Amino acid sequence: MNITVIGTGYVGLVSGICYAELGHRVVCVDKDLAKVETLQNGGIPIYEPGLQELSVKNMAAGRLSFTGDLRDAVGQSEFVIIAVGTPSLPNGEANLAYIDGAAIEIAEAMNGYKIIAVKSTVPVGTNERVAKLIRSRTPERFDSISLPEFLREGSAVQDTMHPDRIVIGADSDAAAETLKQLHLPLTDNIVVTDIRSAEMLKYASNAFLATKISFINEIANICEKVGADVTRVAEGMGFDKRIGHAFLKAGIGYGGSCFPKDTRALIQIAGNVDYEFKLLRAVVEVNQDQRMSVIRKLESIFDGELQGKTIAIWGVAFKPNTDDVRESPALEIIQYLIRSGAHVKAYDPIAMRNFRTMYGDNGVMWCDEALEAAAGADALCLLTEWEEFVRTDLGQLQTILRKPILIDGRNVFKEADVAETSFIYYSIGRPRLN
Ligand code: UGA
Image (tube, rainbow, N blue to C red; front, side, top):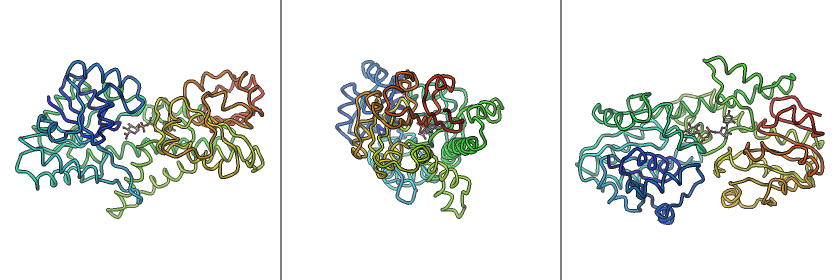
């Protein structure tokens, strides 16, 4: 099939490259010509394991190309995917300006029947809005499809090539069947629904996963008070197939470009039809508060006085294996420390550059190595569970810090290993050591 993907953000780029890997001829379009040039030269503007190799391979095979010329790309394709961003508006609602813009440009480029799918996460009714925008501008026939995406950053290629399910929201049986055939090489779990249900399904999935995280984080907070261990609690709960082990890792709350934005948007979607989504509001509130659990621990150690203390931060990405720092819990933690008069030394293997570009230097001393950040600090806070941190030699680490105080915001260290050191060790939802 000839496919155009509009938008080379995470979703668009990964999908486009993976469709090419399946043997289709794919053109990825972006308005940002500097990005297009990077991609044409075999570069990848995001950090995503395995993606660059796949891009270069498929470009060399002549199946994948990048352009700023939407009209030309759409003109050559029978399947057009909209994968542009839907950032949050100040009230939490999704901003559909890029979606509308893409729809209008597609309409102007129509030269025959096409299937037009929206892969961006969009409020219920957006596919109808896109169809209306196109229909009012062109007499050409087309079918609308809602094709939500479920990939995770950091394992995007794996998730796309081996998805748990593909969801196709359609009001045309023929178009649904065409897309079903297109996706069958990836999985047999293909769910065909009406368009509105597919749009809702995406938000419901992310909201449910966010709920699991806030739930286990609250259990963790209670565990700390009653002397239980949340990792054991989650392990035992997870064996119940109805609960499952996934997304029960307690920590400092979810971040990233999806959960925070999508939970806020779903609260708004519900609000727009006079429904108050109370549970999801609580999920968001718990998540916000969970970021401060690291601060509360530091304050209890230093009797509320962070002024003049040197605090080392390990990890500013919202999760490991990505350079994405959008809505990273690290931002609020660092800003709070700086406001409190602490000196912050920070290190992240991949995401420091993005963090500084997006949020400025924040008065932080940025370090080239993990141990350099830890050197001379009064306490070390681990905020992202990068493998490099997990493999740290705790014996060596304790000699480098001024005081052996470790706040493990992701529960990465084994208690038995910590017990062999003199670390004062706080984690999330597990008993304090020493
Ligand atoms: C998430 C979903 O997992 C994808 O299915 C979805 O396609 C994507 O959003 C999206 O809507 O585009 P992503 O944001 O890449 O993917 O990252 P996740 O791996 O889901 O992690 C999200 C956050 O939850 C991270 O901050 C992570 O640290 C946190 N988390 C995750 C926990 O705190 N505990 C857990 O047990 C799992």
